[in-house]
Image 1: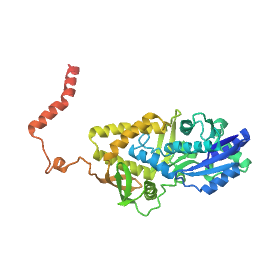
Image 2: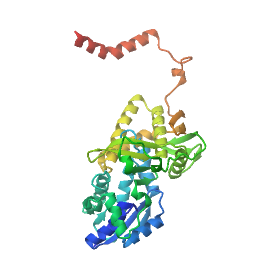
Image 3: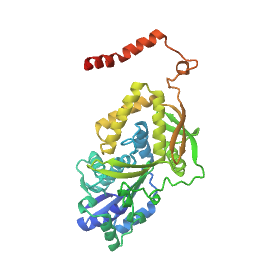
Image 4: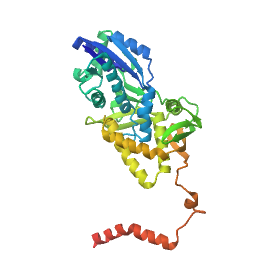
Length: 392
C-alpha cells in the first residue's frame, strides 16, 4: 500500500509520516510543494526520511502559483472580510493538484494531508483533491488521530522524529503571498501579538517611510519605480521593501468555514500594497456603476476562494468578468509605505475619464441654473414623493 502525503515539514505532517506507517503498514511518499515559503527544502527532505518517508518529491511551483492564482487575487482585489489576502487559501488547490499528480504517477489512490478537524484547510484540500481524483481515498491523520500539539510533540520526541523549533510555540503557514501565525497567546483575542511571532514585518529599515510607484497593465503589476520585472520578482522585492518598514500586518477575528470565529494573524506586505494600489487604479478608471459592480463580485470571489470552492463554476465566471473589466486598468499608482500604513499619493491612467476641463472649480464646466435645478428635481423625485405619501 502506498500513501502520498502533502508534506509541509511542520509538526502535523512530520508526525503523520510515522503514524501512517504504523497505522497502515504503508509506504509513505512525501510531496513538498514550493510556493515561495522560506524553507530549506534539503533539510525538509532529510526530516521526511528520518520520520519514515519511503520516497520524497520536491516540486517548484512558484511561477505557477503566481500566474494561476496570485495574479487573479490582485485582479479580483481578493481580501476575505476586507482584510485577509487569501495567501493560504490560494495555495491549497495548487498543492493538492501537485500531490494528486504524484499519486497518479505512483499508481495509488491513497492521498493524505495534515489538516485538523477545526481548520478551513481540511475543506480546501479535500475538495481540491476530489476535483482532480474523484475516487481518491483521503486520509487525514491529524483529524482522525485527534491529537493536540502537546501530544504530537511528545509522540515525536518518543520516536526520535525531528521537528522544527517553532513547532513548540506557533503554527506557521507561509508562501510568497503571505504568512499566517496561530497558536500560543495569539488564541486570546484580547492580548497583543508578541513581536517574536512576526518575521516578514519586523522593522529593519532605517527609513520611517518610503515612496514607491507601481505600474499596472490590464490589472497586473509589471514594474516598481519604472523598472519592469516578472510578477514573482516584483512580489519578492515589495515584500522586502514594505516588510522592512513594518508594513503588512493583519490581526482580526475571522469567520471560519467550519462554524466558529478564530483570531487570525497574517503578514502580507506585498499583497496588501498591490491590492490597495490596484483598487485605487480601478476607481480611477471605472464608471460608478462598474466600480460598484466590481466590488460586489470581488467580495463573492474572495468568499468562494476562502471557503475552499476554487473549483466552483461561479468562481471561474466571476474571475472571467473581472479579467475582462481589467482590460482598462492600466496606469501608475504612487504609494507611501510606513509602519503606520499605506497612503495613496497619486495615480494616472490613459483610460481615466477624469477631466480637469470638467472637474476644476476654477476653469471647469458649469451647468446652467436651469440645468442644475432640473437635474435636482428629477434626481430627488422618487424620494420626495415617497416621503410625502408616507407622512400623510
